[in-house]
Image 1 (cartoon, helix red, strand yellow):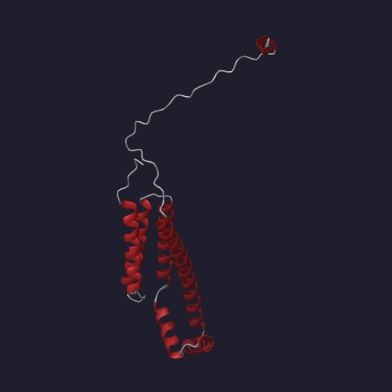
Image 2 (cartoon, helix red, strand yellow):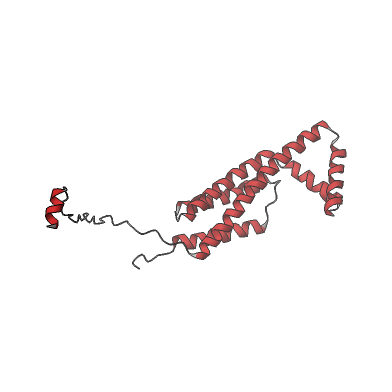
Length: 187
């Protein structure tokens, strides 16, 4: 009787539809590896560091340009002395050291800060790619970091410290170990 009611109202028995099973024939298919916690931590540090360097280099380019235009329109020695005194009074820095720091800052061209900002943007893009577990990000990050060191060294007027070199080597080595180690996908 139930079947007759279904037929009267236009209902038919529901047949289970099975979707065809597609076999994976591509031998290069590998599941996306899970990002280890230590790698996530170091990637976050790199994101923070690259973002901070982008901001600082852009601010340095703007500050240097403004300072250069101020120095053209006024007595350079008097402006340098007043800025040095202002910083030394507020931060407790010796005015002679502050004056020397300003002179060195003015020797570095503004385009240096713009170029390094662009390189740090590339570095951040590489970190984001590595966050998505793409090995290409390692190459982008490494190239950008090495170019920052190279440009700083070539410019000769900017300060490059051993700490900068060691941190770059440490981070690149950590990423290389994590991205190019043999991973067992059979689990």
